Length: 373
Image (cartoon, one colour):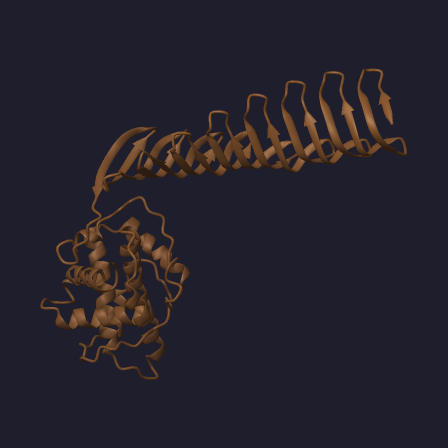
């Protein structure tokens, strides 16, 4: 059936109860054309809308609006394919006429939310967008180099790490694109000579704890295989050693928070002292006799000391993007750390109780030589 309205609009297609319902074609007097499904007079279902200026939208419609999956092709050559809600692009792939491409969230026709933008010259940005601009956390790869950190209004802003094509890395800070500070980050690890430098701060990391350690029970309190007799200490002294920082309390979720505490709140000397305290506590606990009156307390303190050593291991692993040696995982990492603590304290030539930083450095040396690679 074909109907021509007084205003010049023309409909050709199916009717049910006097309403455009079924397949049809509606041509407006201004030259716009819709071809597809109708329900009760509304464009609903699969269809194609062609504007008089040459823009084309095809896909899912509900009550006259693109809603669902669709493709919008502009007359100038831009193409969007993805999701629509009430005629608005919400998430998909936008290909620009110049060859640039954006994949991700959109709002009001702009990149907004999480996304990936690929430039025709090969540069790639992955991260947060606000109102069409790189804003938030992101990673920009360009000419063999990479910047990972904070952005604002399309430029560098805040702290980040710049890695150059030659292998050099720098911790940098910008203020609205202007470089404020720059510090080289060493990627070389000598287990002995660089032990203390491993405890230095790197102020631009977010901690994703345990991604590659699913075979390790993080919270299990392990008995040490170290058989030498350890020095004795009372429970109050152990509690004092473990008094600095948040309490992990055998909670795996707290491991990440403790790594963040190490990273954000401790300078290099404090890092060494904190690690040394956990090492000394773990070693002393191996020499303490458990009985009915202190069994539960010793278990809790042992778990706390072991997990604190584990957080320092995680800190070193993440800060230098290192992997765990396969044999260390097979052995059981917690047991290996307890053995490390006993060996360090047993063979330490200084005063262990007063030279906690030195114990921490010994711990870094051990982990660098025996656990990470």
